[in-house]
Structures are given as C-alpha cells and as structure tokens.
Length: 276
Image 1 (cartoon, one colour):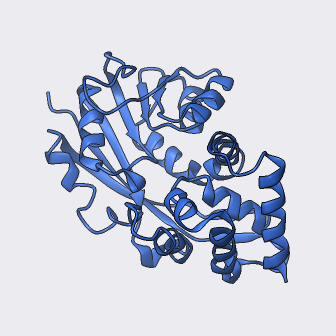
Image 2 (image 1 turned 180 degrees about the vertical axis):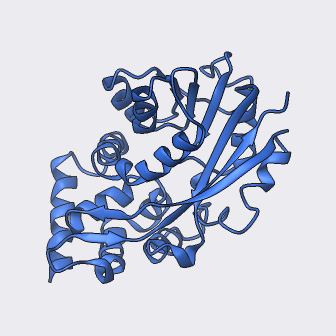
C-alpha cells in the first residue's frame, strides 16, 4: 500500500511540473540533487580534504562538480575553488551559491569553457560511475593539475559493501539495450588505479569512506536516487512510472518503522600526484 501511495505522489509531482518534458524534468532533478542527494557524499568530501590538508594554500577544481556542495566545503576551509559542470540546471544552482562554475564541453583542449589555468587539487567525486569514457575524464583532470599537485578520483566501493547495489540494479535492468553503465564498473581492486597511468599520474594513496544514504521517507529516497543521473537511460527506455515503482520495491527492505529509509554504503577514492 505504501508503495502505491508514494508512486502516486511522485506522478502527481511530475504532472504539476508540466509533464515529462526534459527541460522541466532536468530542473526538478537538479533541485532534488541539491536538496536531497548531494549531502550523502559529505563524508567522502571531508575525508579527502582532511587527508590532503585542504586550506588557504589550496586551489581546488571540481570536475563534474554538479551543484557544488563539495566546493562550498573546500571554500569554508579557505581554499580557492572553481568547478566545471556540463548540466546547465546544476550550474545555475551552483551560481546561486556564489560559486565559479563553468560549462564543460567535451574533454580536451577543444572543450570551449574548460579553464586553462591549472589547480593544486582536481577532484572527480561524482562523474566516473556514469561516465561513458572514464579514461578521458581522468586525462582531462590531469591536464588541469599543477605539477606536484593532486588528482582525486572516487567511485562506489565493492557492491557487497553497498546496500544501495540492489537499488541501483533497477537502472541496469530497466535501461534495455541502451548504453547505461554499471555504477560498480570501477569498484573492483585496481579499477580506479588503472586509470592513472594512462593520464601520466602517479598513485599516492587511497581510502574507503562510509557514506550512508539516509532519507526522510520513501518519496525522498526515490527523488534523490533519480537525481544521480544513473537512471536516465532506464526512464527513457521504460518510463518514469515503471522505474519509480521498481525503485520503491527495491527500497522497501531499507524502510524503517518511522518511514525513513537508510542504506549503508562505502565509497572508495584514490589520490594521484602530477609528477614534477
């Protein structure tokens, strides 16, 4: 019964926002990311910043920074921050936070908005799990890093350590024969490290961070997960209603008596150095 009620709530919101048109859906997804989902990765951001002692002497570039919470946290430590984000709706939210975030075209020198100045720390916190060409993303991160500076790559930890794995599997099952990527493709041992050599980077450490996904209710959980972008192929192939229904069913084991949802997850990061 709860699942049927929450499906109705989500569908009512979709109609109120003007149907399923992509522009309005994009704005809704961006706001759900900023208001619901983005905070789930704060332990990852803080662990990396603590390890690298981010502060006033650090220049941080967030590659695929989305609405910019990670940059805000770095700025609060005194760092100079900037970001690149391809989605206009997310950039708009970042600008509302007074962050300097430019559009990101195709990786490489022809990227248009890609800044030419290098930074002492380039982070790729969210972009890799859904990237069609992870190596190109890492190569671009290396290009924008000062000599002696650092690049940080992050991805999901082992699926057996992530309770969200079954929920994320909805994206794969409902994407049909589209090009939807496995969000755990880089989670195997050496998965992130294998990207470093091709970009001319030198490994300089790694770590795992607990990032539980906690939501006030089932509706918030569905909206937060959909905002990650990992379900876009599934929505386009199978439709919003079916994907929402299957997400609710997959989330049901993680419902608590008070109606909240909580899933234990682990994220992994690697630190690389730009050789002198």
